[in-house]
Amino acid sequence: MGRYFFLLVNLLVLLTMLLAPWAVPMREFDGTGYLLNPLGPINPQGLALPEGLTFGWIGPVFVLWILLLLVASGVLFLPNAESRARGLYVLGGLGLALFALEALLFYQAVSAANEAALAAGARRPPLRRFALSLGMYAGFFYSLALLLLARMQLPGGRAFLVRLRGVVVPVFSLLLAVVVGALVVAVLRPGLGTEGVEGVGLRELVAGKLDLVTYTFQILFSPILSLPGLFNSLAFATPLIFTGLAVSFGFRAGLFNIGAPGQLTIGALFAMLAGVYLPLPGWLLLPAAILAAALGGALWGGIVGWLKARFGANEVINTIMMNYIAASVLLFMLAANEYRFFGQTVRLPFKAEGFEGRSEEMQEGARIPLMIHILAPDSTFSWALPLAVVAALGAYYGFRRWELGQRLLLTIVAMVLGFALGGLLPGFPVTISSALASQLLNGSFLIAILALLFYNFYLFRTSAGYELRATGLAPKAADYAGVNLKRKTVLTMVIAGALAGLAATHYVLGAGMDGTYRLKTAIPASVGFDGIAVALMGQNMPLGIFLSATLFGVLLAGGVSLNAQLGISNQIIQVLQALIILFIAVGGLLPRYFTDPLRAAQIETEAKAEQEARQAKSAPAGGN
Image (cartoon, rainbow, N blue to C red):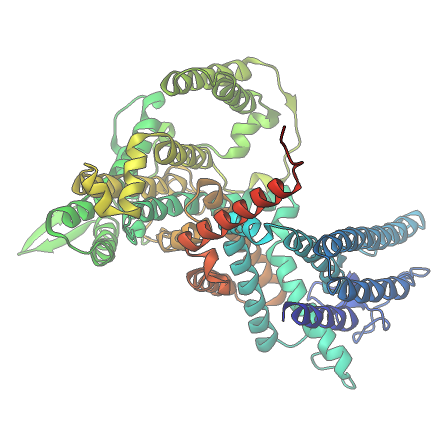
């Protein structure tokens, strides 16, 4: 059955290569492009390429792909598993080499055309918006699939995938979400370059739709290709890291913390009160404001934890209700300066003058600087942060024989000394573009990294974290072993709330909303709900949470460009997030052993026993 499914996949890949554009050497701002295809170019808008620019190699390369697909179809029917694996490995490598050759030929041709135009006196390159397209990408992903399938032919192949289920499930769920999202875009929008053009055939319509889908996701992922785009993506990702950690921390203890929006809001209020009104010196004011944000979130989460421990109240219902209360408290403090209660006028000092609901500005000492100012103050690269990171890593991993507490203390001291020494070293001037200088990525990103390290250390390096995980996996067994479940419930919600509250440092202390150091009633507390998607896709692991938050940050940054260039609403990002949660909830439609730990452990045990039996069989017989 699997072999015939593989033949169906081969046919689908062949049709995709036959119908889809392979590359787009020229594209207008509205998305209309000159599409290259093995059957000939597709150009319904009549765009003109520079003279002498040809892509005649696409036809012969397509013939090579046909041969590769045919050979791969035959290899899978070989009787010997090792022969199948060897053949698929070779074909997968050849496919990757063929893709690299295609990309090289395409970019060389485009570069040569641009250089020739500039040499002829052109003011700017004629080809500025060019890219590979779905036809080539199909070959690339097919080659990767061949390599994976080759590993599956060898003994223990299924166990190999099961061991990586923490990666396989979210990646497969993301791919399914992209496919469904692509169908949504293809249904709702006409193909690029074909709308309003008479005499367009079926081939052009199909190619236009496939080009629309490909270009949509190229724009969504385009921020990773430029430094300003990457900074913008990390700015979106920073609060998602905090809220993802807050949700994941609750999951680890068997609690569903859906109250991150309220915890973020109260953390923002506490940070505002500290940053605006605390009469502290600058070197002490910023740490106090950051601590206040954590305390505000911890208080709001702790209330829910206490209700759960004391009365058994459902944390989902309570956190949802607390979200509404937090939003109302924010409006009460910043929507107006005067209220009437029982005939008495009550005046509040928190709202700044004007119609907008916003606080006074943070004091100078309570402001978190932008990352570009940390890395390159006054347009001069500083060695402070790089040396601090290198010193901390060197201290932590260079003294593994020390006790954990001593290593942590040494790491902190090394980090501080590295930062101080780096600040004294002479830097070098750098040119900061206006696009990079305008990005709102600030030092709260570093706080988010520290929060990830704390999450990893507390849960996986301390006895308290072990007890918390045991509480989530088997509460009755943890109770029998002497774990105080009520205390763990309260502590879990306190820490989870503190992590969500720290997200306010990005918006309030770091000016992450619009570049102003104020708290506003329009603070995007909904990122607390987005933290659920981040935690689920990250599989509650620190690295996974960072990667999933960064992925959503890239999509959010790309959604702005998508709306500007193609007029597609950036609500498509919410559709993708919802689809990712849906597919992760059903295990990516993968077999049960990817989501059932007991079944996964059984498969790994069977693979290990099979390997031991095979080694014993191949070992030379002993005896006297």
